[in-house]
Amino acid sequence: EPEVTQTPSHQVTQMGQEVILRCVPISNHLYFYWYRQILGQKVEFLVSFYNNEISEKSEIFDDQFSVERPDGSNFTLKIRSTKLEDSAMYFCASMGTSGTSGYFGPGTRLTVL
Amino acid sequence: EDQVTQSPEALRLQEGESSSLNCSYTVSGLRGLFWYRQDPGKGPEFLFTLYSAGEEKEKERLKATLTKKESFLHITAPKPEDSATYLCAVQALGGATNKLIFGTGTLLAVQP
Image 1: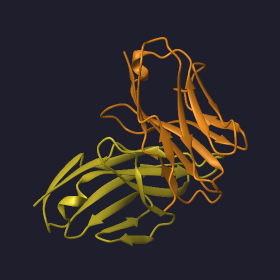
Image 2 (image 1 turned 60 degrees about the horizontal axis):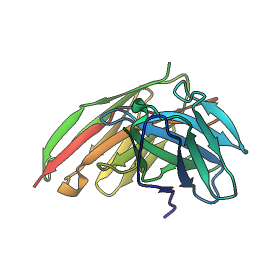
Image 3 (image 1 turned 90 degrees about the horizontal axis):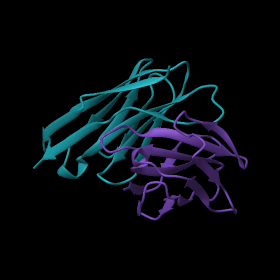
Image 4 (image 1 turned 90 degrees about the vertical axis):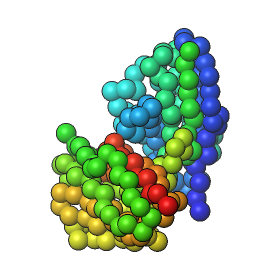
């Protein structure tokens, strides 16, 4: 069974600090995503990444956010200066070329104090 | 604007009591409709993708169906371990990214 992994599982940070969330997508997938879910709310699209560049981003994904695929396996989400409202579960997901199934990681719970 | 509405918000069933969850969608063109299961504090677990009206897919006690405006997730003789939030998401045609637009989910509780 293919698996997306994420680290850390829980990150606590102070407002204004930078955080980096890490993901290892499924190895032969080509589309990579970050979604977030604020407690009690729906899963929201943040950004998609294809062919080593951002292919689409939502209104939430402002200049405080950035993504990188620094090597052939990792995919990272950086928040430069965290705000209280960034507290949420962040999910990494990946899809193959057919886009027929989207596999999600277990999530990183980000708590901004 | 592409939208997904799920109903009911919450559903409580007795073990063995079959029922259906609804997902209504509005999308410019449907590429795929996805069903996921989400346990508390965990990531969505992929269940099915449906592509065209009339299509059906099954997995154990779950069967998903699709029409031009909605999808149903039928749960036959549920067990307590089926308790979870079930999420529906759509993928629009023409998008370069295959992103998913989610509904708010149906919280299912199956009592023994």
